[in-house]
Image (cartoon, rainbow, N blue to C red; front, side):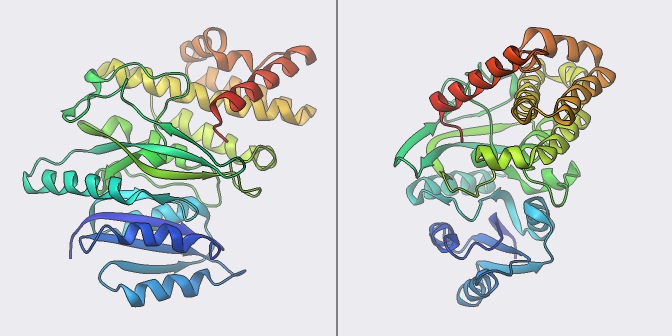
Length: 342
């Protein structure tokens, strides 16, 4: 039976917090689907919790157990099995705001009734900082029109701290399948691929100014923790290379200059993050990988390389001297303190 939307929840040893996530999603009612993907959990009761929800809510929840394939394979499994017209990923340590969820679902129902489906819906997300109990709402009021369907030519300018994350997007499921999206296994940070790769296939969008997604920040083992990211910089690089190869931004610009501009900005952010963490490592091997990354971009698109290397913040993270490297790391940490993005 077709559902309005599929919520995919990749779970890996998530027993300590996943129930809060699932309980908020269940408030969406009978025309939603929740796919709990147990990604080979062995250290706690995650598999049993998934099965319990599936038994208790057989018309809403499905449990899928797979060998460990990483977060990306959990997302892939959801796309393969989704029966929802729309598709959203919710990480098992995050949750949704129930009143906002109801508003979003009402709008999606209207699109289905009117037979005027949008390719992507955007809503706000909230950083929930556990270490100091603060929140930071990320909205798009200055970027997207509110309350109407629009295309890329109607978007405004993103601020420095603004970009689309997995937390803010809901894709039409068939669009994800049509564009052939498949995230790499055993790789962290693939949510960047999930957001970026389908964008040129999106023709129309709708933005709801509601704070839907609650993004938990502050657990010591969380993938966006600085020390964890430093230890996984090779996986960040793998994602970065994937994004470089995903699209020819010149071709994208031929269809939509506004979209190409945003995708350039997103790729710049990824180059900045990769370069910064390789700089933090500071070893000759890490600095060599940083050079290789930039040289690879040059081989793919020399014009894009020149623009990014010399006319953007990303280039400032590739300083050759020790004082320059220290300065670039200091700037990154100051930005993290101000914007509280991890």
